[in-house]
Length: 86
Image 1 (cartoon, rainbow, N blue to C red):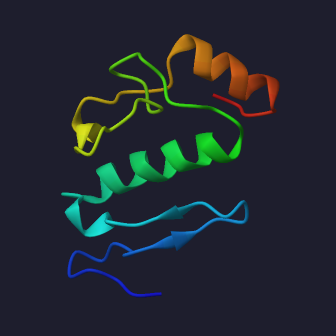
Image 2 (cartoon, helix red, strand yellow):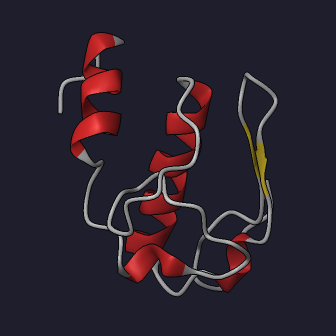
């Protein structure tokens, strides 16, 4: 695995086949963790969410991770049914 100068991975391969690329644009490790949480949500079956503060919002080519605070109620309930403890 290759890493950026900030110590963040450049790409991650998930078992389901999702690949996160473009990670070097992230500003810090907190934003990296939010992106990983977002991609794990997709692996659990979640789609993009219209709630602006939800981890599952669509970035639409930008980097909105500074605005994301948690999973919204709907996304959290879905993950809890899948066994996540939130």
